[in-house]
Image 1 (cartoon, rainbow, N blue to C red):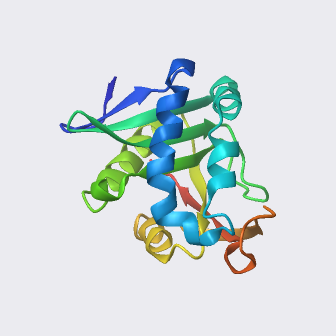
Image 2: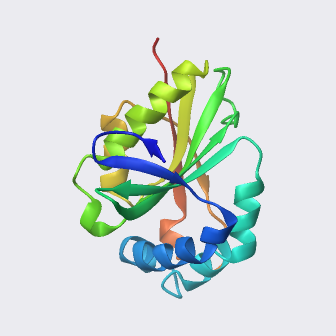
Length: 180
């Protein structure tokens, strides 16, 4: 376990945790994103959190995948990919915040903010110059949260998932230059 704060820690996700991660995402994803999908997000969960997809994510070099543990309970997941560059961002040595999902009951407790500060500190120690992420434009609360944490708009992409509703496909790519 990695202690992030007095009540937040990170537990490394291992292959044996695949079923637990899939179960967690079946609980966490639909309340936030079901309305984005023609099938309420079932296809996304089944493909992105299948045992084979999880194993592939775990085998990716220079990535860390964690369960977020708050007061002893697993309340979400957090994935970081080191040395992944945001296209056309001329800052060397970048890290991508790939996933952060929290159970609804865990939101509003500064967990996301605490994890971002932890990631910033770790990235700086390792010599990284920027953190970046993709944020769904239709999730205005999350989008605003990242802006409040100092992230800036860089560009956007459109997701091409067949079962995704057309009006929610836009994702903004945000970055934060790390100040030493």
